[in-house]
Length: 481
Ligand code: B12
Ligand code: SF4
View 1 (tube, protein in one colour):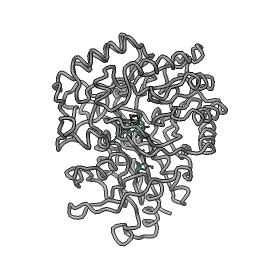
View 2: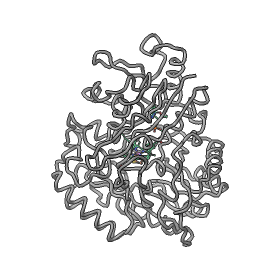
View 3: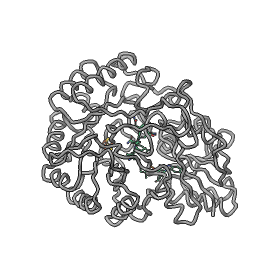
View 4: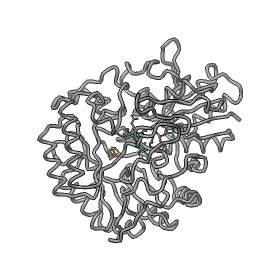
C-alpha cells in the first residue's frame, strides 16, 4: 500500500474547514482507504500559519510528514497557497486536483494550460477522481514510476514535459451510488459548534440557538441542470446518492457528535418526494439542518414539511433585484419570483437567506439601486454579498468576449474570493459598465446597506488577527453557505 496524504489548500483568509469542510478530499480518502492504501487527511491549517503583517502564508516545514503521494485539492481561490505547500512538502509524487485544475486543463483557454500555473506539482489530475486516483496510487505502490508506461491507464492525468502539456482523457463521471461515503472519521480538524447556521433560527416560530451544536456538511447529490452564467457547475449531470448512503452518512456524523447539517447540494428542492425522504432521514437522526435552492423550485407544502423535519434555513441564489441583471446572468428568474421564494420560506417558519452578487458584467449604479429596493421590499432574514469574479468553469470565463471583458494573463495572481474587498486590484476583470474603483465603493456601500437593513450578513473572512500556528478564527455564525 502507498502512503498517501490528502489535504485541501489553505484558506486562512476565508473559510475555516472546521466550519466548511471540503467533502471532495474525504470522498477521495474513503475510496483510497477501501482500495487498501494507507491514507491520512491533514488539516493544512495545522501545518501553516498566516502572517497578517506581510499577508503571507507560512509553511512549517518541520511539521510536514513524508509520504509516497501527496494529493492537494484547490479551487481557483486558493490554488496559489496549494502550490506553495507542494513545493515545501517532502513527498515522492505531488498531485494537484480539484475544480481549479479541472476547469483550467479541461477549459477552452490554451494560454492558461502552462507549467508555470501548476509549478510545485509533478502531476495534475482533472475530473472526479475517486477511481483514477486509486489507479495512480496503485502504480506508485507497485513501484512503477508514473512517468512511464503506466500513465495511459490513469484517467485525467496531466503532466508537463519540457513545458509541453501531456495528458490522458478526462475520466467519465463516477457512479456516485457505488462510492464509499466520505471518510468523516479521517478528518482530524473536528467540527465547529454552531458555525454555518444563523445565530438563532426560527423554525416553527420557536427560537433555537444553534451555537452549541456541532455542525458538518453533507452532499446528497452532485450536479445542477441550470445554466447560470457565473457558475462553474452549470449544466452538469445530476447524480443522486442512495438513501442508504445518506443514512450511513448521517449515522457516522451522529456518532461523531454532529447535530446540525449543512446540505451542500446545488439545488436541494429539485424533486419533492426525494427531498422529503432526505428530510425524513435527517430527522430520524435528530439533525437540525439547512440547504440551498432556487426560487423556481419552491412549494409551500414541501417547505412546511421540511421545517417540520428540522430544516432551519434555506439559502436562495437570488443574486440580484434587477430584472436586467438576472437576465444577463441567465438565472431564468425574476425579482418578483425571488421575493416570493423568500416569503414562502419565511412563512414555513424557516430562516430565509438571499445570496446576492454585485459586479456581474452589466452592473451599474442604477442596477445596484434596484437591488437595494428589492432588499427593502423583500426583507430576507440574512443576505450574503458576493463580489463577482469570472471563476474558471463559468460561462464568463469560457466566453469573456460575450460579456465585453478580457481575462488578464496574471489572472491567478490575485485573491479570488470574498474578502480583500477593499482593494480594486482583487478584481480580476474590468467591467464595461463600471470602473473597478467605483465597483469597490458601491460594494462597500451595499454591504453597509445590508448590515443596516437586514442585519445578518456573511462574515466569511476569518479573524487572522492572531498570528501563530493553529489560531484559525471562526468564519462566524452568519457564514452559512
Ligand atoms: C461545498 C463548497 C464550498 C465549501 C467547501 C470548500 C470546498 N473547497 O469545496 C465552502 C463554503 C468553504 C466553499 C467556498 C468557496 N467556494 Co465553493 N463550492 C462548494 C461546492 C458546492 C461543493 C464542493 C464539493 O464538495 N463537491 C463535491 C466533490 C465530490 O467534488 P470536488 O470538490 O470537485 O472533488 C472532486 C474532484 O474535483 C477531484 N479532486 C478534488 N480534489 C482533488 C485532489 C486530488 C489530489 C485529486 C487527484 C483529485 C481531486 O476529485 C474529487 C472527488 O470526485 C462546489 C460546487 C460543486 N458543485 O462542486 C463549490 C465550488 C467548488 N466553490 C467555488 C467557489 C468559487 C468558492 C469560493 C471562492 C466562493 C467565494 N467567492 O468565496 C470559496 C473558496 C473557498 C476555498 N478555500 O477555496 C467554485 C470553484 C470554481 C473554481 N474555478 O475553482 C465552485 C465549483 C462553485 C461553482 N459552482 O462555481 N465552497
Ligand atoms: S448557481 Fe446554482 S442554480 Fe445556477 S447553475 Fe450554479 S448550481 Fe445551478
